[in-house]
Image (cartoon, rainbow over all chains, first blue to last red; front, side):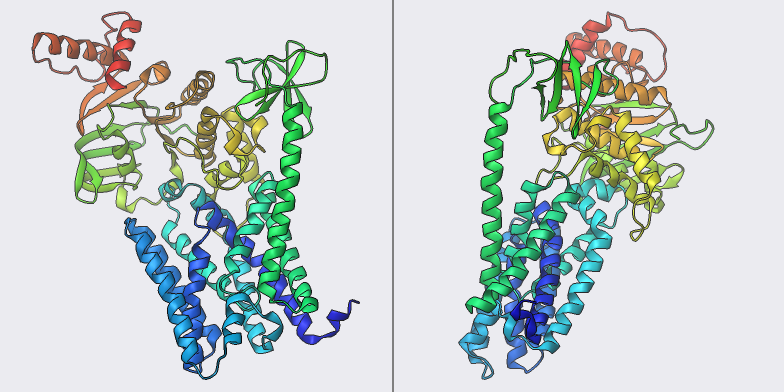
Length: 332
Length: 277
């Protein structure tokens, strides 16, 4: 057993990291899909004002932060629904107002120090009380349950909101649910990753996963794997190096992204070299097209005049097989 | 599954219906009845309100007056959404995250089950069948973002089919689709029409769908200006043309006059394309 597991606080921290590592990318993928990647960041800003109010009034900062983030989430969704161009400005006022208010109020609070502020902004899981951790764990489990059971519907709404509406899906309710899930995830993650960095754990694992997966389902699986590895290893790293957990986690998530980008680019170049475009034809191959279909790994080739055509994006590739037919196309 | 028994109530009935956005009326006083088995092309120049009309029927644009009934039920009390298969006008599917053709088509099954129930084996086989109907069975696991425009349009048709609807409502299914794909698309629609699927197709390119539709409704400036068979439409277009040249007022022939086109379809088609592009 590694020595860090001997500490009770470390076991709790790792459990929290595990839950956050699963929940953040799971909720985040729908934000990426809706092209609202930075919305979690804004909710984090507003949550800081909630934390400050909690510290000033001697209320649980977790609860006040939760209330602030959820109110912000609902407001964001309502502003989006009205679809005004001034909505953008309204969001800016809300987000910067939130963080400014938070910083000012925390500085006035007797119970806090600059170190305290840093802990909320950038994560300090190792100094978090076990009663807080219990609340976080409970909320994280709720987020996981709701997101997993609604995932096909959240996917449908993010993929094509108009179609979802036409088929009678409760689109507004689902969008509000996603906004609230995001807010809760932000607050749950504030001690592990920090309010300024949580958005990164929602988005970066998904960015990496989009390069690894070939479907929504597998990409989501990869995102959770990357999220969990970054958050758990980040917490372990911060234990040994004495660094804030949030920064360590996000740096790991970025490292994973860069490694995958470089490997994918290398493979892409290799594929481009081997890529041979088939001659152009207006005919579209399909199950009833009359050309012999051959299963080839994950796709179907069609035998066309003795050579094999494999569908690739909008055109066909030559797949080497029966003979060395000279392709007419060049590089893609 | 797509054939509705004759004698049942009309699929869609509009009585002096008006649609628009907030207070802006786009289409007004439309009377239209679509019966089971009708394959209707809803024609009209850009801005004539044809998209607003179908969007209004689907509840995506505001219903500003008159009666709208679907399968005999007034629009505001209609809850049987799976009976309508909507194929929206989209130039491409969202490419912000990966999604396979199969995953997009599976969305069509969602209204058939409560939110807590996962997809069943039956759902999966209906999805496969819908993809096969549009000729994309071999692309089920392909990321939709890598498909061509025409193939993406067929994915959207398959999604609508997966809901097992009684009527397909399509908004510009052929717009921006390459030629090879347009043939396949026409074949798909032909196959559906042969099965007796009721279809309402918004389009400004009649040419691609000419052999499929059995009725043409033409909107101009928010009002219906023609409703009849394709043959009567060809005659109407000629009369329209004559009217324009000789400043003679010509009343539009009504539906089902049964006469063939006055000139070769080729010539008529050419003008139709010009008028409605």
